[in-house]
Length: 248
Image 1 (cartoon, rainbow, N blue to C red):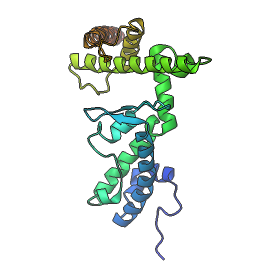
Image 2: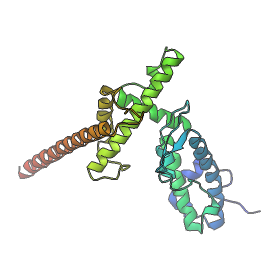
Image 3: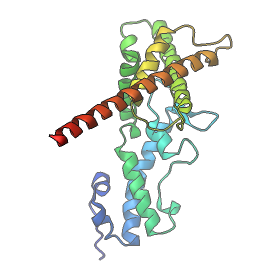
Image 4: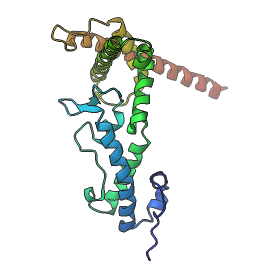
């Protein structure tokens, strides 16, 4: 009977195998490992999609479901909705392709927002950092009608913040979904402006007022420049300090 290297290994154990161990796998062994991991990864993707909707551009955003999630992992694995976001042997052409899929599955499974509970926790952490509290905290001990109103406000504020933040990145010459220095500080800064502007974010048509979003974006962009200048000044001061020590 053939003894397979992956026999008896859990998904986590396969994902945590050192690359030098994975390199020992032939095509059939790699296929068995990928099948095991793909089953777990695809289940996570399917569960996340239950709490998300796709925008006109294809990107996933939280749906109106009770469990509001952060969609980072879902957008990453689907490349902003351009791909189905599925793993499996049938999607591979050879051993090297399966090896790459395992690597991508490892990245996905290690993301905080790759599980529904982790995605909820990440969304809550962000709300607390950006708005000072989560929607759950704001709605505590409120009536059903009050809770619904609070949740709608959080939804509107979150959409406004993210739209303004991505527009601020574009003003700075970045891809709107790029990871940049001080991203959390910029998001928090824009979030505070959104809260201060609460009640004036929507236009008469019930949609986000683009002029207001532009105002937030410009403010966020200017704030990002100030953060950059501060970092540059600190770097120059550090270099001068090191140069002074070298002369001594």
